[in-house]
Image 1 (cartoon, rainbow, N blue to C red):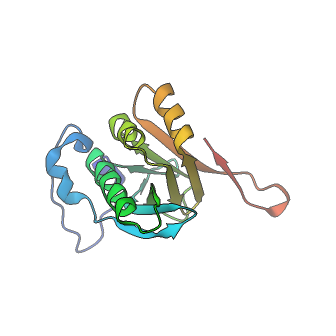
Image 2: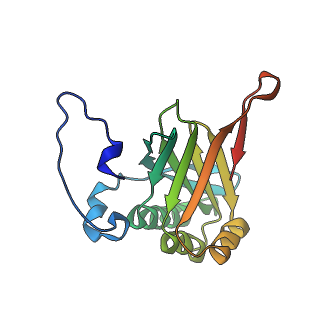
Length: 171
């Protein structure tokens, strides 16, 4: 995330750390919050990892999931599934914290990390955001990995409200 996207408040402390790509920087693992496994539901045990989005001037909140963060979530989900007494399958939830006034939420995942979750057999990935949730099953995840050439970008955007009802457009 670019420094220009942050708005400082009184009392904020700035620590400047430069790296060409933090998602591939091994030292960024200390920035990854601890993942939490939920209860078994519909045969799946999901591990949730949190990521914070920064809202740009265009109204889109953008979140970057690091390779380390997603790989850790995959490992934790596999452990949770193995420890399950219900033979649950592993799943991952990426919970995006974003400004409720954002017009869209874009979550970017490095392709190598996305491919890892497919290769390790994560059965489902859910993206949660203030604008809505997107759940992708293993077959869909596989199709995305096959079709993409770069990092994976998942977006949820507000759309026009026909007849006074909110509509969410998934891209």
